[in-house]
Length: 260
Image (cartoon, one colour):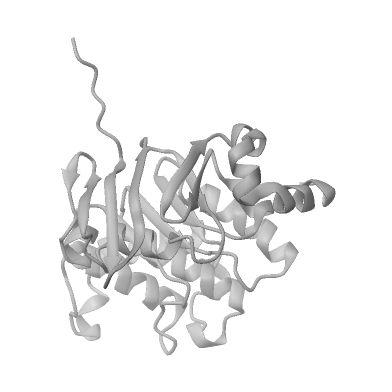
């Protein structure tokens, strides 16, 4: 009997050209449900393009993207989101003049199909209020319930953004450099937060900070010149000769010297 090989997310010979320039050159990746994967690689390797192809911002030139065994390449971002994939961006994506609670409730309502319901009707939507309250506790912002998002610290805004990203109950979460711009102590706390809130979900993150990569990822995908040249556990990627030559050598040495 054939065993089930449905992955949470799969890329099959994915290619993307801009004009005559091929940025993604036959990328293959198969991520199992519940795995936390960090995508690393030198600048210009195609990491952001890969994210844009997965989340529907770009359509591939050729190849396939599958979410839970269903093809999503060529679909619009909102359609992919409804199928269970949610993405947070490098640029914080929150409503600055709404409170923490209101931001989360908007995220919940959107996912429940309420769309832009007039705010005065919202207080009656107990299910949405309850879910927003749970999310607020998960991201450790319950003490900032009525604080306007614009008045939060940078790290708190990123935490709120992750709360909004998971509000819809997506099974696959994409985070684009989640700890960029944070201090070392904020970063350490944030890694714990990401681990907690993505428990049981599949996570893909683009990350430059090797301390974050080794602290967060079950597996690492190394992208060089638009191809995935290695996909394995952090230990095996660290020891991979080809990866060291292409990219990791100095970064790993720095991380190890720093005690990570």
